[in-house]
Length: 68
Image (tube, rainbow, N blue to C red; front, side, top):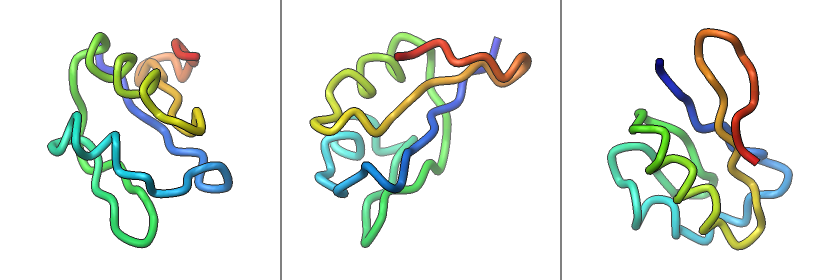
């Protein structure tokens, strides 16, 4: 299974924790963008570390949200 991170741009404040924890997945400049993917456990961990809860994780095949 493949999982994707999704950023709620209206909630994101570009704090940078996500890029620090997963630089192959997130890029923070003026806004945060998703540039890659990672295992589910890593994506959920990064999403949980977001101070404004702007990251969700979805199952790429089904489109179902798996976090939060």
